[in-house]
Length: 88
Image (cartoon, rainbow, N blue to C red; front, side):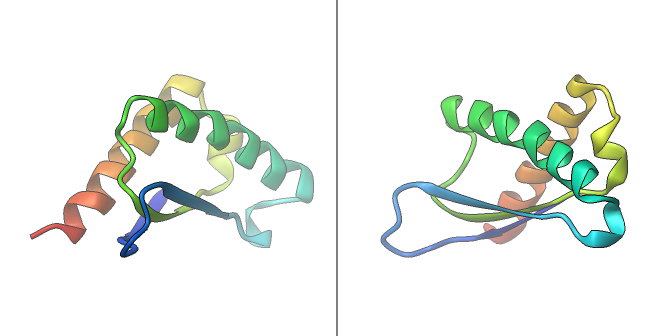
């Protein structure tokens, strides 16, 4: 799982997009991955972990079957790395 962050001037909320490529699997698998990631991103937003700006979340096929707690942990780490890499 990877997350890319782009600060957006004048934006006070976090915009999130999901990039799940066709090589990941069928439409069912790709949609399952998105459905698993959305509540976790919402959870991060409620805790104030998401910065204002734009995030692009990419995930591979193992996310569809991984335990939910593992996906939560990996997403949190990926967001922290993406945001930390952008800041000096």
